[in-house]
Amino acid sequence: MKCKKCEGKLEILRMCRKIRMQCSECRQEYQIHEIADQLDPETEQTLERYTVIIYD
Image 1 (tube, rainbow, N blue to C red):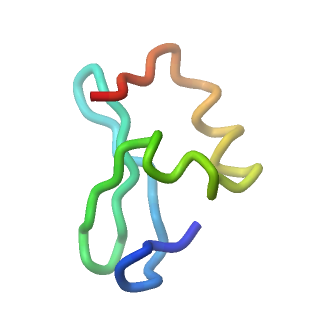
Image 2: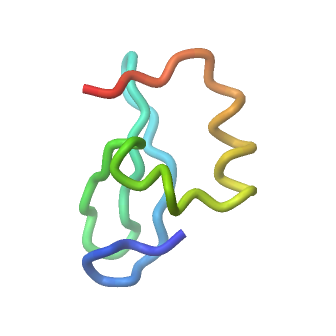
């Protein structure tokens, strides 16, 4: 997955009680619902392992 801002790679950022996606280049954070339409199968599979994803 690519960052909307700089085209860097988005990685899963796990924090206490929430999951976000963060760019490895510019460090921009995205809530999952902001990029849900862009999730690739690999990222979806990884996110399925988490029992709770909070959209705040």
